[in-house]
Image (cartoon, rainbow, N blue to C red; front, side, top):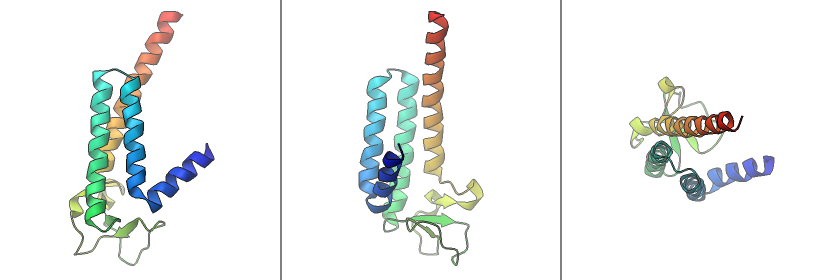
Length: 131
């Protein structure tokens, strides 16, 4: 499992396009496996969040700007950088006032929570019926 996470992180830092394709493939598998209108809505939210993050990252030369941190602070990964006056689409960037999340991140989290909630509900319903 650690190898999977290492490969996933490496794909994101070196080749964000590959990571985006991987995320879309996982979401497609969720759609094929769980046939629920609410799960599909959750996947749609996740895809929208991915798209928003991809747009702001692409507009800023492959890095995600962070609004609200000092320019002298250097983030742990080169994929993030402090926002400047030349930052494109700063309203879609990671925001200090949102706990360093972007609007796209929050939309993805909402979609993911929706998917997990629906799948958990189905699992508990199935266990209750079989008991």
